[in-house]
Length: 186
Image 1 (cartoon, rainbow, N blue to C red):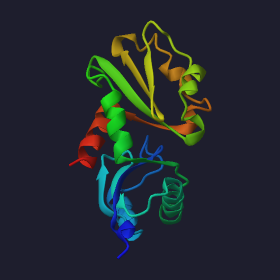
Image 2 (tube, rainbow, N blue to C red; image 1 turned 180 degrees about the horizontal axis):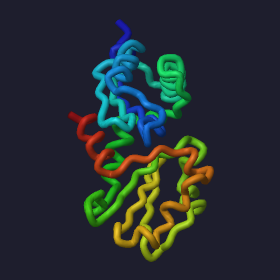
Image 3 (cartoon, rainbow, N blue to C red; image 1 turned 180 degrees about the vertical axis):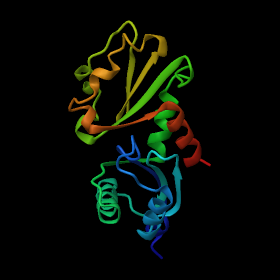
């Protein structure tokens, strides 16, 4: 018996820019069915912004990513970029985020998942910040950006829009990432 084929890995697929402002509409139930038809199991979608948790025997995340992007193109007629992260990566990211970095009425905390060409700590040097109000940390392929909402107008967060870095990331708020971690580990 080949035990390798029995091992399942848990992943989350993060789809960039779907169901935002009425654009790139993808129904989550249909997306879930697509993942299942591709052989992935225990598929769960979380909120409408394109978070799909699934188990797979496949371990090559580059190949899985390409397959999912091609599947979305074929089924939904959309060109959507996808980032795949495994269970350990999401857990590590969540452990690295300070407990008081939340997304609520007082604070805004975003987790920016980077495409491979930007998954280096040096990426922080490419981002314009206001050190008085913006707090950024780099953890294993993501940048976590934290600020007080009262200081949003002073923040450089919006200056990232349209940059090469922005075009090579997908963003989730910290509450979503923490919930994905819980779902992946339950």
